[in-house]
Length: 465
Image (tube, rainbow, N blue to C red; front, side, top):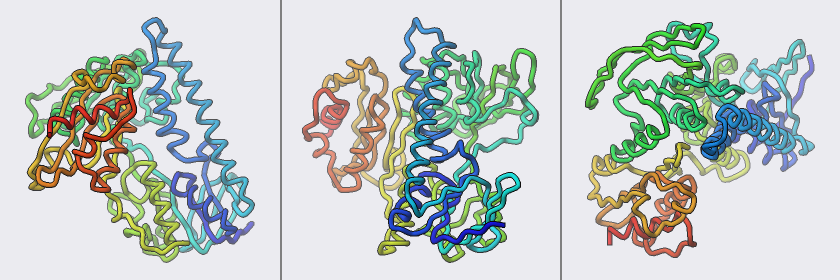
């Protein structure tokens, strides 16, 4: 058996792990990066997550009325594959050019606290390290629904976006943000999309006015929502798969959808993602996990085993690539910095759901702010009614609204929900304002380029004057 001793071992080529590996390698330390598949260099985001799905969203939005849906979709899938292959190669090269970094392709299993065996076919390599970073990401949850196992028409998000033929009918089981993004995308490509959601409404984390506006946009784009229902079985047939569902009475539901069935060419399972920790041999290393299967870490991302860290989705934190990047900063601060940085430092972390237009939010919702005891001012306006935001008309996307939640006493922004063109960019400005105590009045009176979506802040926040 071949052996290798390194200063740092990283298991998984995700954003956090590869950033730690590159920064450490550039300092001249010996680094081993282990990734189980050469099709996953760069991690989930590059290959099967953020980048390919957002490329497909862009192409779905770009389809013109005269474009044949099947041909346009096939073109989009090819472009997506070319893009991910390009970025996968660049991510491999990012580490491969560093002399002290070795990329190993194979499956790693702990055989000691900081020692693993990596297997690729009959080849076995044992690696021991002074420091280990686990970055194995997350994977789709497969619900225990009769008929799922063995079905040729049930897919996860990974398999769906690799499908070269556009499904004429798509059934989405799960109305979370992954399911909603893909539902909106495939509807715009031309699929007939039905979403089954067990909760009484979709966009459950948002205020009712924001959630209702986002749902209405998706319905106009062709998505059908069945809420307060649970899938009870899936049965393949020659012309598709039939999903049978039953009613789930939910608190707050204005009505209850009766049980029934819906048929799709494909059925997407989108009920969440879970950390990929099983099969790593964590018990052999003595590394503790949480009751949800994540690697247990403290605020500095340290496991209970000295010298072993966990970053990204596998540690049970928010499942965002930019959180994994921030995880890498915390670990690097432990390894080569002051050791003071921690997850407790995070404030006003934004997120975006890439429907069309995207929904981005940061901070408190109006509901959360009132529940926390704030005296609240709300500034909200439909994008179509904004005279000072001509960019929305220029790009022919006037759907949505902008909403700010402001503390009446201090004038500081508590939160914002932006359902509008460019919101994935705008929300970062609002997040920065919240983190640095920039008032709503300062955002309102700031000078913004023209024509830009940011100008909407001037008019929306003017109602607070």
